[in-house]
Length: 280
Image 1 (spheres, one colour):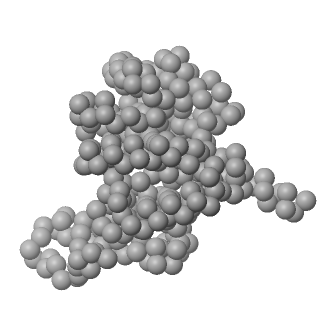
Image 2 (tube, rainbow, N blue to C red; image 1 turned 90 degrees about the horizontal axis):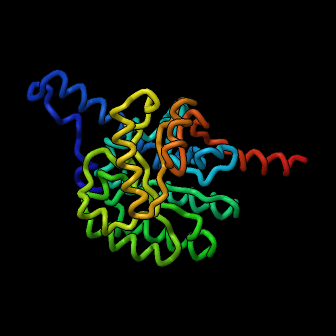
Image 3 (cartoon, rainbow, N blue to C red; image 1 turned 30 degrees about the vertical axis):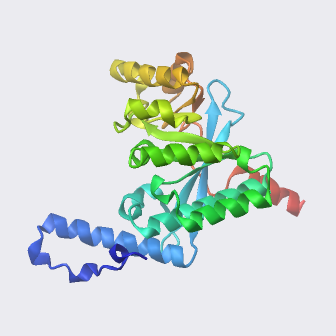
């Protein structure tokens, strides 16, 4: 762990902080310790959510593997509850390694599966992450063409030149890349021409309620047009209503993802099929 990870939060004197700052620090420390404990005991898993073609929700184009940890009571904790606390620490790099490890394992076990796994640009060049990927590709040559690596727009813009080089190297091996949360406001369009992402995932803030929101209709239409111009598959995130799904399908977006179709689950359909075959 880095020095930042080892700092003693208890040494922070409450008198030097506002009550709100102290409460936030205490909460973050609690979250940090919970994730570290989960990592130490390998209580980490993926929850899977489908990404479906617009107009064909019965045949998923691929699944996204979303990292989850178990707390001390056994509750499954989604990434949104902890990722901001750990993403700049080495714990964040280890979480990326474990997510990739579990994603590669799922791909190796299920040859018809195509899966996206999230990572931070901060993990580019992290030795353990590179070893996990190299080992997974060596064990199953079909994995590369079925693996999608998702990098958020904010993360990509931290080190855009490094991301471009990283993507070029892995795309040559057959791996695809998705730009996640597009439209959140960080991308420089100067770099967008250089990135060559395969998939563009439109941030959910523009998607929810889009059927009845003229502003989001205009903004989403512009984001879809950008994806089409650069020959990227477009995905609308956080689709939660039938009316929104119908509207988006009519706009020409390629794929849809959200609770309207299914919630992330640690018990994906292919795992259930495998278990039923084993007990038959």
